[in-house]
Amino acid sequence: MAKDPVCNMNVDEKKASVTSVYKGVTYYFCAASCKEKFEKDPEKFAAKEKK
Image 1: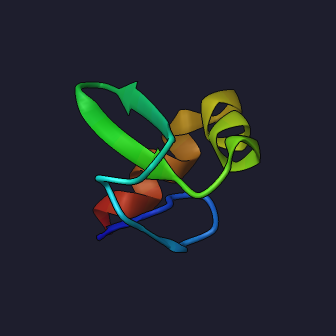
Image 2 (image 1 turned 90 degrees about the horizontal axis):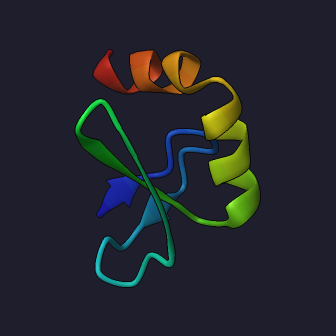
């Protein structure tokens, strides 16, 4: 399971319909709205993932 970097919800990578690739890393989202938030400021959410 992956974590949606925006809302921290668990997302099954095999079933995720919404994904985004940023700096070579694939991020999985529970909904298109979370992907939109991520894409507006990917550094904010990508940095949070690394902690």
